[in-house]
Length: 323
Image (tube, rainbow, N blue to C red; front, side, top):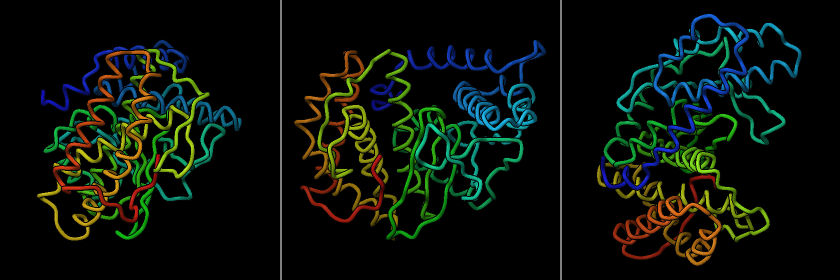
């Protein structure tokens, strides 16, 4: 286990995921037949697929679609298992739905996608792009993070290098990431790390039963506004991990992707410097000592990595949306 993987190691998350997956499947199942095919998949995929089935079943029930409801509850396993592909970082699903296939639910302001009976894998160019991004991640010490927390990757659209990229994760679909891309695998790797980090922290807080008070707010330079402590801490964890990724991958990049990552490091260095005092205060709201130490270690490792990479704070236009 590399040093960064050791910092992010939290066995409690796997225990929580097993318990949560079993609980979800118990709610979904209406029969007592043999386990669905996805029970043979690694824990990150089983965890992700269970929540896609739960979300799909809830949406189907809400609109009165009994056919879809029965599919999600009883027969989805083999179809979803057929979408799984082997990558350097383990088994995962890569999809690229059309915007018309994205849905809006009562629990999310952002259009998202739920795996279903009509889902197909992404085409070969996007599958290769993702595989190359995962290869980049494997060289940075962040492979364990992405292996466990980006089991389902949903590519939401292509953008030019000069456009803002939007990526997100939602708590109802853990181990799933949604992200735009530029066609550059090194940049896609950064955004997979970013969203996997959000999924990691969501699971860590749930597994450790840590509740962040919602009555305190801190200024977020990523949003340009006051943010609740929960969102602020998420940004102070996810963005530092992208800095660590970018500084480690930078020597092997070129062209537009290299420029994006250089810009990202410089911009995040300024922002991490701006929030350092508030981050120290916000950390006190995390009741679990081990988790506090993990968040603090990642933050300060990113600050050091950025200084070594750039030699000093600089800022420029963003190419990544705030969490």
